[in-house]
Every structure is written in structure tokens, then in C-alpha cells.
Amino acid sequence: MNILVIGGTGFISGSTVKILLEKEHHVTVFTRGKSKNMLPEHPNLRMVYGDRNRISDLAGAVGYRIYDAVYDFVAYLPRESELAIRVLRGKTKRFIHCSTVSVYMVSNEIQCPITEDQANAPLMPFQPRNPFGMDYGILKRQCEDVLWRAHDEKQFPVSMLRPPFVSGPGDPGARDYFWIERIRDGHPILVPGNGDFVFQQVYVQDVAKAFVSLLEYEASIGQAYNVAAEEIFSLNDYLKLLGRLLERNVELVHVPQDVFDGLPISTNPFGDVFPFNTRRKAVFSLLKIKKDLHYISTPFKEWLPLTIDWYLNDFGKHSTGYDRRDQELDFIQKWRRAQSECVK
Image 1 (cartoon, one colour):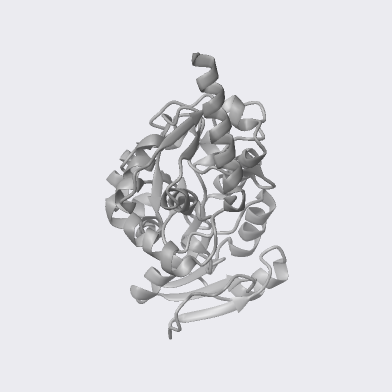
Image 2 (cartoon, helix red, strand yellow):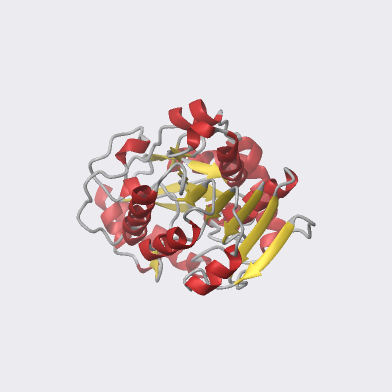
């Protein structure tokens, strides 16, 4: 197949491109060229540089070609999806959009396990500390709305995937490393709230394989799918299992959410720092993707050791907020002292 990938050098998109090349597809990657390109040299790979927000750049990348499929990994605003429609209507047999479970998590009126038909549940009041991103979820909903309105099985056939937290070697967010680095230093771990809310991650290779498998099943046309790990953990469960994989004892110190939210160490300019603190149950149904795409996720105990190895040997940086680790430990001491005083 001849395939165009908009934004093909990122964490998920780069993994998808590599699988497409392994399957001997011809791939054109359209990118700004600002991210480090980790794609291999390959005779079937063509790189085109430009800004997806400029219609001349995107139209130039498409040219007169008719693509068997187009992947859009970098549409974060509805106008970006609108521009893709203008340029690509009638020029692709499949248009595949990378969405997110955040489209669900900006609503309070969802029921777990969350099914794909809950993407338009009424919005909750704006919550700046929504761990799934209020603005992000709302704007990705709008991207989806634009695409579904344009969906046409002959002129512009749309499919999409909605992953949760994506993990694995190369993760630019380094969410797992936040906890890995703290567990390895041997000191207590500060946990927001009771740590009992359950959530799902997904291994980056599983997401990439699912994106490629969309091409293989006609039933996926006009459909959206959750793509996540089948395993469900609470933050407490995750940290204990992570400790076992690291061969470290893990001492968890829980702090009420409202107390945690008042701490300077709980945030940075981009929002909450402590990953996987979902503040609510976040479990996503996989019945549809398993039925239509025969999806199977990689077990946590298989992919996480690979991820740990990458962080310890290749990442070469500290995790987010680790420069304030001494403040975390200082607060833990003060919290324990205050709790002890209350017991007397």
C-alpha cells in the first residue's frame, strides 16, 4: 500500500511507521522536522517536510497521489482536522485519526467499563487538574466531531483509535520513570489520595500494531476503538508490582488528595506531576477491538522490563520533578510527625 503519515516521527507514530515498513508498505512521512528522527533508512520510506497547518505544505506533500491510507497523529485542534479533510477528501481510501480516551474523561457521566459510544457524554464543569487534560480532551472531541461529519465510505472513510496512557521505551513523557527513579532511590514514595483508583496503560507497540491492523479489517471503516492493556491496576498495585520487578521494597505514604493538591511539588507548568493518579476509576472496554481487530495486549511483566532497561541505559535524564525529590521526602517526614502527634 501507499501510505501517508502526518507526524510520523513521534512516540506512537514512529513505532507505527516501523511496522508499516516491516510489512513492505510504501510510506511517506510528512513532518515539521523538529523532532529527532529515529526512523531507519529504508527504500520504501520518503520524508517530506512542512507545516501541517499550511494548506500549501500539506497539499504539496499529497500532490496528485491517491493514498491507500492516511494516518494523522498530530491533529490536536479541529481546524487541523478540517484542513486535512480539505486536502485529502477523495485522495485516500482510509483516513485514520489518533484520538484519546480523554474524550471520555472530560465527562462525569460515563460508566465503566467505558465503551466507545460514550465519547459524547455531557462535559463536566471545567477541572484544571483533570489528569486526562480538560482542554486536550475537549479539543480532541472537536477533532472527532469534524471527522465524523466528513466521514464518507467512498470519499473520506474515517477510522480512529483511542489509547490511554501510552508507555514503553522512548516515551517522551517518561511517566513510568517518575516512579521507577523514586523506587530505586530506596526512600518512601508519596502517593496522592488512597491510591485505589484503577486505570489502564497500553504498551506503545500494541498501539502501533493496532493502528496497522486497522488496514487489514474492512469492519473498522467508520469505527472508533479503545486500545489499552487488558490488565487493570490501581496505583497501589502498579507500584507494588513495579517494586517487585525492580527488586526493591516499596514503602507507600498516602496523603489525602486535597492536602496533596496544595503542595508546590504536586504540579509543574504542564499540570499534575505524579503520573497515573487518575482521581477516578478509568477502565475502558476492549470488547469491540478484540472482536473486530482480534486485538491482544502484551502482558505488563513482558513490556515493563524492556522499558525499565531503556530508562536505566538510554534515557540519560532525571524524571519530571526529581529535582524536588528532597521536598517530597521532607514533606513525608512532616506528615508522619503530624500524624503521630494526632494519635497521642
